[in-house]
Image 1 (cartoon, rainbow, N blue to C red):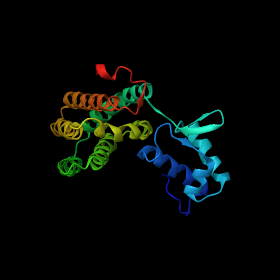
Image 2 (tube, rainbow, N blue to C red; image 1 turned 45 degrees about the vertical axis):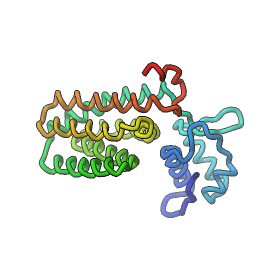
Image 3 (cartoon, helix red, strand yellow; image 1 turned 90 degrees about the vertical axis):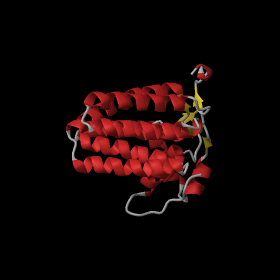
Image 4 (cartoon, one colour; image 1 turned 90 degrees about the horizontal axis):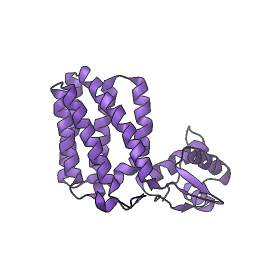
Length: 228
């Protein structure tokens, strides 16, 4: 499903691009799903010219792939997952270390508030909210690192990872609860300004997150899932 767009200050091409990309990230458009211009144009309520411009951008960014005369949603693959999480680990560990160096009461209060909400969401079994709050938690750490270049790189990687994170908490029944505990461990390390513990906690969390996603049947190239 792709939501119909409402024109505003942005041009139609940009709105179409954002709407289709969000549908891919959220899973409303499934990995490998074949798309047609007719379906997309009708869903978005636009003509085919701005649609084609939007689709070409999505193809360049690998959200959509073109195979002969067909276009389809890019698949989720084990290789891409491994590469993305390797980059995420290096970048977010650095962000955590730099955030430890910049700890303020306001920063800690923000993290605690997020964690209180996340804990409540987990108890209500609201996995989508847990994922959202997890993103907020990491974004706040990245912001506190006060490194614009790092932030730009991490945000690029995390946008791609969003597709994978949504399936992670739905793959293992206990993943949501474990993720909350891991975030609390990161919070304690930052609160005590222990950079070594923050590095270790962030590495462990990202590794466990990746492992839970690898179990999903939606990931292509998972012939060895039974060994995990």
